[in-house]
Length: 149
Image (cartoon, rainbow, N blue to C red; front, side, top):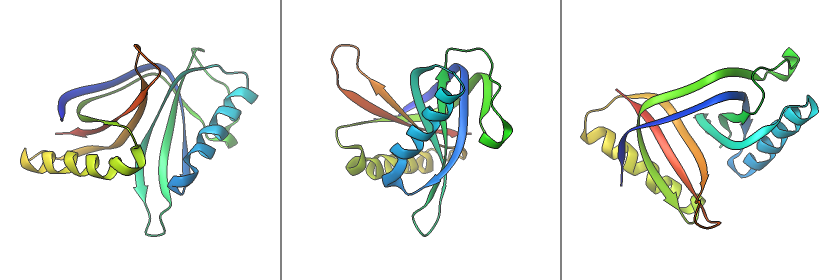
């Protein structure tokens, strides 16, 4: 199932670019959380990332976003952390991945690509990945979104 006109919107978002092999994404999440903790910022639990590119060696470039409770940041420039008081991306196509993300993500990405092609949409954003939890139980799912024109 593909949903049109999806939106990602959060207040007080810190972000940082990382290069890593996909198997090491957790290390990037941990590094970013540690930087924020070191400078006394409080993540609120909302974490998402955008896949900006992937090299032929399998190294991907991604921007990791974490919503924080503080309304501004003052982190040394060498940490390369960006902050936006309001983050919003709209006009997205979105699909959900439940179960084994590693196994199903390529299939779901292909569904998004095929849908874009069929509707003659032009991709305007990188792929966004949001990890979500269901309120009724402890299970989680992933939303994959791409902005289109």
